[in-house]
Image (cartoon, rainbow, N blue to C red):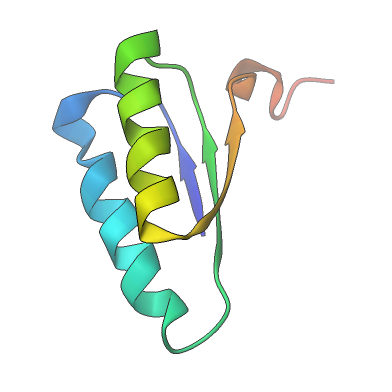
Length: 68
């Protein structure tokens, strides 16, 4: 799964983490979060992902996607 965009509370990334956890119970799922967010919020999301035991890559360089 892929999330691209600013990582802010109104985008409901915690819901995506929970959905990834549920999907992972059926098939192997890896989530990529490509975007920037405030450090404290990103840390909170990382803790949640760890507690859920899901595979997540955190790419804070989303601005480079699609650029030559």
